[in-house]
Image (tube, rainbow, N blue to C red; front, top):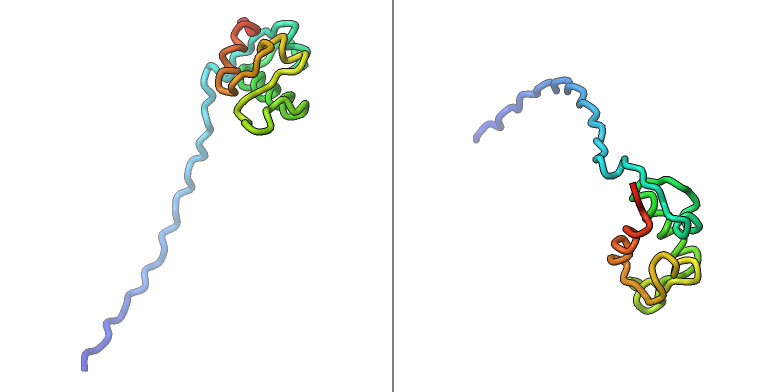
Length: 105
Protein backbone atom coordinates (compact mmCIF):
# COMPACT_ATOMS: atom_id res chain seq x y z
CA UNK A 1 0.00 0.00 0.00
CA UNK A 2 1.14 3.48 -0.85
CA UNK A 3 1.32 5.99 1.91
CA UNK A 4 -0.56 9.27 1.47
CA UNK A 5 1.74 12.26 1.23
CA UNK A 6 1.55 14.68 4.09
CA UNK A 7 0.67 18.17 3.08
CA UNK A 8 2.77 20.85 4.62
CA UNK A 9 0.81 23.74 5.96
CA UNK A 10 2.16 27.13 5.02
CA UNK A 11 1.48 30.19 7.03
CA UNK A 12 -0.24 32.89 5.06
CA UNK A 13 1.94 35.90 4.53
CA UNK A 14 0.40 39.14 5.66
CA UNK A 15 -0.61 41.01 2.54
CA UNK A 16 0.62 44.52 2.10
CA UNK A 17 -2.16 47.04 2.11
CA UNK A 18 -3.01 48.05 -1.42
CA UNK A 19 -2.73 51.73 -2.16
CA UNK A 20 -6.07 53.33 -2.65
CA UNK A 21 -6.18 54.64 -6.14
CA UNK A 22 -7.93 57.91 -6.60
CA UNK A 23 -9.65 58.29 -9.89
CA UNK A 24 -8.28 61.22 -11.79
CA UNK A 25 -10.78 63.48 -13.39
CA UNK A 26 -10.09 64.51 -16.92
CA UNK A 27 -9.99 68.18 -17.79
CA UNK A 28 -13.25 68.00 -19.71
CA UNK A 29 -15.29 66.91 -16.71
CA UNK A 30 -13.87 69.70 -14.55
CA UNK A 31 -14.39 72.57 -16.99
CA UNK A 32 -17.46 74.62 -16.21
CA UNK A 33 -19.39 76.15 -19.06
CA UNK A 34 -21.79 79.05 -19.07
CA UNK A 35 -25.25 78.06 -20.19
CA UNK A 36 -27.66 79.98 -22.47
CA UNK A 37 -30.85 81.45 -21.03
CA UNK A 38 -33.02 78.80 -22.74
CA UNK A 39 -30.97 75.97 -21.27
CA UNK A 40 -30.87 77.66 -17.85
CA UNK A 41 -34.65 77.27 -17.60
CA UNK A 42 -34.22 73.51 -17.95
CA UNK A 43 -31.06 72.79 -15.93
CA UNK A 44 -31.55 75.53 -13.35
CA UNK A 45 -27.96 76.88 -13.16
CA UNK A 46 -25.76 79.41 -14.95
CA UNK A 47 -22.48 77.45 -14.93
CA UNK A 48 -22.15 73.66 -15.00
CA UNK A 49 -19.79 70.99 -16.29
CA UNK A 50 -20.85 69.24 -19.49
CA UNK A 51 -21.70 65.92 -17.76
CA UNK A 52 -23.84 67.79 -15.22
CA UNK A 53 -25.70 69.57 -18.03
CA UNK A 54 -26.48 66.29 -19.79
CA UNK A 55 -27.48 64.64 -16.50
CA UNK A 56 -29.91 67.45 -15.60
CA UNK A 57 -31.28 67.47 -19.13
CA UNK A 58 -32.04 63.75 -18.89
CA UNK A 59 -33.67 64.33 -15.51
CA UNK A 60 -35.94 66.94 -17.12
CA UNK A 61 -36.73 64.65 -20.10
CA UNK A 62 -37.74 61.77 -17.85
CA UNK A 63 -39.70 63.96 -15.43
CA UNK A 64 -41.72 65.56 -18.25
CA UNK A 65 -42.02 62.25 -20.18
CA UNK A 66 -40.50 63.66 -23.36
CA UNK A 67 -39.31 60.27 -24.62
CA UNK A 68 -41.26 58.53 -27.37
CA UNK A 69 -43.23 55.65 -25.85
CA UNK A 70 -42.45 53.16 -28.63
CA UNK A 71 -38.89 54.21 -29.46
CA UNK A 72 -37.18 55.35 -26.25
CA UNK A 73 -34.17 56.61 -28.23
CA UNK A 74 -36.26 59.44 -29.66
CA UNK A 75 -36.86 62.58 -27.62
CA UNK A 76 -40.02 64.53 -28.42
CA UNK A 77 -39.40 68.09 -27.20
CA UNK A 78 -42.02 70.03 -25.26
CA UNK A 79 -42.26 73.85 -25.34
CA UNK A 80 -39.16 74.55 -23.19
CA UNK A 81 -37.07 71.77 -24.70
CA UNK A 82 -37.93 72.83 -28.26
CA UNK A 83 -36.06 76.12 -27.69
CA UNK A 84 -32.89 74.08 -27.09
CA UNK A 85 -33.26 71.00 -29.31
CA UNK A 86 -35.62 72.22 -32.03
CA UNK A 87 -39.21 71.25 -32.74
CA UNK A 88 -38.58 67.89 -34.41
CA UNK A 89 -38.01 64.66 -32.48
CA UNK A 90 -34.29 64.07 -31.86
CA UNK A 91 -32.28 60.89 -31.42
CA UNK A 92 -30.74 60.74 -27.94
CA UNK A 93 -27.19 60.47 -29.30
CA UNK A 94 -27.60 63.65 -31.37
CA UNK A 95 -28.91 65.57 -28.39
CA UNK A 96 -25.41 66.23 -27.01
CA UNK A 97 -24.35 67.77 -30.34
CA UNK A 98 -27.32 70.13 -30.31
CA UNK A 99 -26.27 71.41 -26.89
CA UNK A 100 -23.11 72.98 -28.32
CA UNK A 101 -25.06 76.04 -29.46
CA UNK A 102 -26.20 76.69 -25.88
CA UNK A 103 -22.89 76.08 -24.08
CA UNK A 104 -19.92 78.46 -24.08
CA UNK A 105 -16.70 78.58 -22.10
